Amino acid sequence: MGNTIAKSITSGILAAKGDSKRALKISTKGIPDFNGNQDTWTKWKTSALNTFIAGGYKEILECYVHSEAHETDNEVVYTLLAGATIDGTARHVVAKHDSTKDGHMAWQELCYLFDGESRLLTTAKRLRKKLQTTCLYAASNSDRYLDSFFETYRDLESHGGHMSEPEAIGLFLDNIHDLDYCSWKTAIKLHKLSLDEHVLQFRE
Image (cartoon, rainbow, N blue to C red; front, side):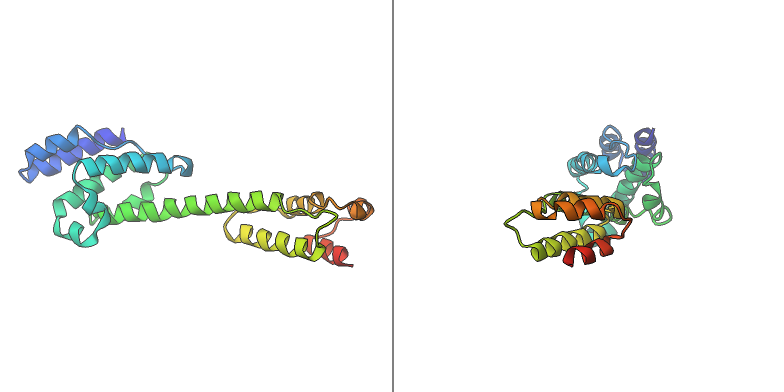
């Protein structure tokens, strides 16, 4: 639906400005619809970018000065983006530019939002995996285990990779493989303590 609308409007814009040859070129391409989901962003961005580049709009996407000097092309990019996002949850990002028809800024804001989220998610996954493999063994240093575990835990929280306190406590205890702590782990699980209280008890 989004692409059909975008093609129709784009052809109208260009035809009205006397560029019917290019209007035909653009109207037969279009870009896929974007539903606004983070997990489909990278694939959609690649497809849309390839289409824009093939149509000669690479500089509109990347260069503000060029987009200002080529108003029609900038509006074409905006129109295609508006059509592609019209039925998805990313519509509000493009809609902010409805009055100016600024395709360059609409594209840049989509990239800023979704590429930023992708980086956060990737980092959060890496930190969560690191946290799961941060363990204390018989030959390990207990203070180093605490420092490493909680430094990674804080990094995970700061990157949007939320981990509930009960999950963090469970992981903190499960990752202690030193047999000298077996009795301590069994005993402390009988008490409903916070994560900080577990650390205090561990240090004692």
